[in-house]
Length: 441
Image 1 (cartoon, rainbow, N blue to C red):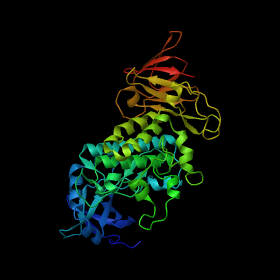
Image 2: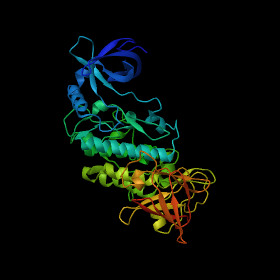
Image 3: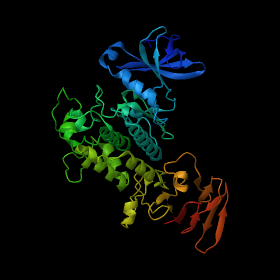
Image 4: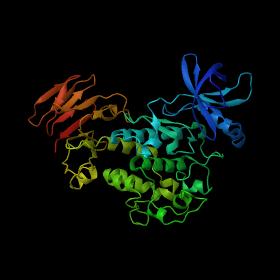
């Protein structure tokens, strides 16, 4: 692939005062080309801009300087850390950043159904996205162009990488980057305000809806009734900016998904718990036109962690299902398995914590407990401290601490590191800082 830089050519990382040797091109777009480059024994990505783009974006270098000086909010961002230039040149041509690991694929592959990650992996994707943008906004920055084209993910683990970080700017700063049609908040698309943290939250909600529903939250049957407009070929302006209606609006059914046209929306919406569907409804009704009513990143983080904890498998077809806590509270039966239609019973589960900060964890095969659950270290999913075992059905102690289990007959069992506690109905477990009660039905 012929590009602006050649294999073996040297560019200079300015602040590092190091030579970067170009190896091969990784990709190209309208703005720039991205290359793999080597500095010593380490490899990085170099984004090298087209001259015509540099002329069209006069604030580019200011944005990059802010990003480089502030540092990456999380490791999930492919963040600039130095400018690059030609040798013996005072003019920068681009920047250098970490390489995207090869196991990370484009979010576009998910939407095209070219990969089928587990629901558990998708909840981790959702958590990581919300967490990364929360940290970005806390630093006084906004992304300006959240969309599925600049997110990559590991379909096995749910880890993510966020690219195109040269879009990032100081919150509410005037600039040339507004966003992507269909993802832009209505007030930004209408040129009423500059992109900001609140408009990022709208775009994040759209992205999360795409990830879980494989469809757009504002494109239902109304897109079948609008005439073709060459100025709005995908109808994003009319459906997402001028007169948006949520496809599952609780009272306005004018934009419902249509069989044969929006099948993923019809299939996936009923699979998820009431709590997640309620968040989407708020995001695209109250939060549609009112920036102050948008779902905050911490709400998405909390929800993604909660629905990850209630996944369980159908015993017949092994499909992942969600235990809907709100249905259980209303004494309603568990929804049938979406995969095979089998009637499902309440799965074994564990309630952890006190009255005001409980976690509900379904004890499905392979489920794990982390410091987030057992040590009140909120959102720390770094190292598993316990894992559900199948034979015998129990909980393996992966921590260095001993647990104490009290059964219904008041007998006491001490569970040491690497031992398995067989789980029985209504037993109480002390993990140290956290108490739990087990229910099997």
